[in-house]
Structure formats: structure tokens, C-alpha cells
Image (cartoon, rainbow, N blue to C red):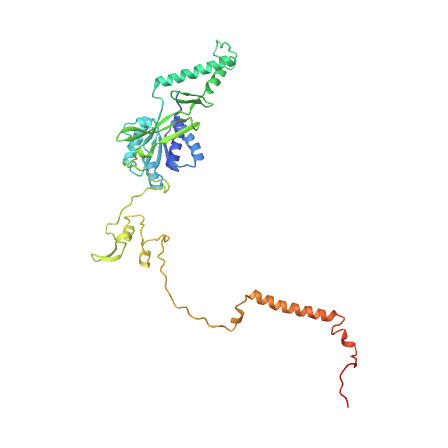
Amino acid sequence: MGAPFSHQADVWIEILVRLKYLSVIFIHSSDSDGRSTLGRFQNLADIANIKVESIIRYEPSVPSIENELNEVKRESYCRVFLLYANREDARSIFQQIYSQQMTEPEYVWLVSEQSLEAINRPNGVLALRLNSVNESSMIGDTVQVLANALKQMYDNENITVPPTDCGKISINKWETGIKFVKYLKNQTFSGETGRIAFDEFGDRLLSDYEIININNGKEKVIGKYSFSNAIMKMDLNLNVEQIVWPGNLTEPPLAKLNFTYDLEQVEDGQYGTYDFMNGTKVWSGLVGELVYKRGDMVAAPLTANPERGQVIDFSKPFKYEGITILQKRQPRKAALASFLQPFENTLWLLVLVSVHVVALALYLLDRFSPFGGFKMADVVPSDEGALNLSS
């Protein structure tokens, strides 16, 4: 009553999410279990936003995959590998991994339960083991499933006699047998081997797994994937601090950068100058590490100057010194149109427009007013009251 091999993909996804690895390379045997495991993993990886960068299929008839491994090393930065293979295939694959030096500190290997049985398994790999080693517990849970299904069917269904002839299945269907299978699939309870549940195909769900780490050739349990009654779903308990990674590292390879690196100090302790050495001008210090391909990148308060800029590329400066220069402020000469500066051009334009508008308004008032100059021009002025000087 164990889970299918392909269900190990569920645990792999949980481990990758916990370790924050978002891209993997999948290696699998070409048998039906390998293909089903790959298909299940790809479906779950799409949901978890995990990218499968490359898939390598191992054929026993063509056992060499060194070309594929070389291509992955050359063209991909991903160093997280998943391996599903039986014991014999895993032994051959591990031999090729050793020859390609792919068990160094920068690599991560998650392997299946069957691959764990290979005698040449590398140090630092993570593997799964189904919690089914206790045979008596498995038998006890199996009997419990059968007993519960029989009791429920006996209480709710009409039990019929099975047909005596099994040759004509389409005609001699035993309806009680079909119902019994449905009752078996519907069983859900907590047994001695963990939570008991089945899918529509009759495969067991919610199986418990132990997370195994290989350290100096010995197996060590560093986690468990089991059903939690508190949250009513499968839960991963992983002690990352106890894991020994390939290369006997105690810290996992970095995930966010998608590549690994080694930090080293420059031997001469210099930033980098272009000086003569043994009659030849060479670069020293940090700049020399880049020029002569001894390093890929340097991080230092390195001054950017034209001489260095000809041989290396600088990133955007992350720190400025804030150096400033004080300079006497020169008096400004008044221009001819300086009187216009207090106001903006639009304001001066509005002033000119308003003058013309007011002039036009005064003209119209004088033109159409009965007492304006245009109406009073024909009226003869009276001399009464006028002051005239005459002889």
C-alpha cells in the first residue's frame, strides 16, 4: 500500500521551494516510472514557478550521457540536478558524474529512493525514503482499509453473489465488486504509516517520506514530509543546518544569484597600476586579476580613470565622495530688457491685451452713448453763460 514512485516529485517541489531554487536540470531513466515522474514534476513545477532548464534521458542501451552533461556545464548556470533512476541506472550515472567533476561544492543533487541504493552514491546528495520499512505497520493499515470498506458497504449496500464465470466481463459484471472498489478508494484515516487516502486511480496519497542526507557514506535523516493534523495537509520539516552539501559544505549554494562563486583576496594587496616589471609593463592588483583572467569580477572602492577604463569595464558607481569646489560668484550685467524680468512674458502679454481691450471699450461707449462726442458734434453750443471779451 505504498505510493507510486512518481509521487516523489511532490516532495522534490517542496524541497526546492524551501531552498528557493527556481531552476533545475532533470535526469531520468527511460522507463515508464521515469516518464511518469517527469510528467508529474513538470506539472507541479509550472504551478510553483520552477523552470526545468534541461532534461536528460538515460537509455540503458546508450549508457553514456557525458556529452549532455558537458553541454549543461557549458551552456547553463544551473547547478541543481534532480535524478530519478533505478539502482543500476543510478550507478552508471553516478560514475559519469564523478568523471565530469559534478560533485564539487557548487552542485546540488536531489535523487530518488531507488537511486539511493547505488553503492557509489556521492557525498552530500539529498534523497527520499518512503516511510514503509515497517512491514507489520503496512499490513495493519491494509487490513484496516479492507475492514472499514467492507463494514461501510455491508451497512449501506445490498451484497450480491459474484458471477461464477469470469470469461465474459462485459456481461457478468459484479456490481458489488465495483462498489467495493469505490469504498476502498474513499477510505481516509490516520494509520500506523501516516495519513491514509487514495486518488481516483487507487494510488495512495499523503504518504510520509524521510529526507536522507549522505554524509561520509552514511545515511542521516535531516527532515520529514508528513501529514500535519494542525494544518490538515502535508508539511515539510527540513533541518537545513544539518545538511552536508557536496564538497563537505555546511551552507547551501546560493539560489538568488543563480550561480556560485568564491571570494579571494588579491595577492599583492594593490588596487591596480600599469607599471614596468622585468622590462615589461603589466597590470598589478585588482585590475591585473581581471586583465589576466584570474578573476571574473572585483568589488572594491576602485577609482575609475581612463587608463583603467581601456582594459576593464566599470559598473555604475555605488558611492560618491561628495567633493565640491567653491567658486566666486560673478555679478550679472543688467541687460537692456532687464526691466521686463520681474514679470513673465505671459503677464506682459496680458497687460498689452488689456490696454487694447480697455481702449476698445471706451471707444464703443463714446460711439454709442447719446452724450458722446459723435452725438454732440452737430449741436450748436449756446453763448449763455459764456465769458466773452469784446470791445
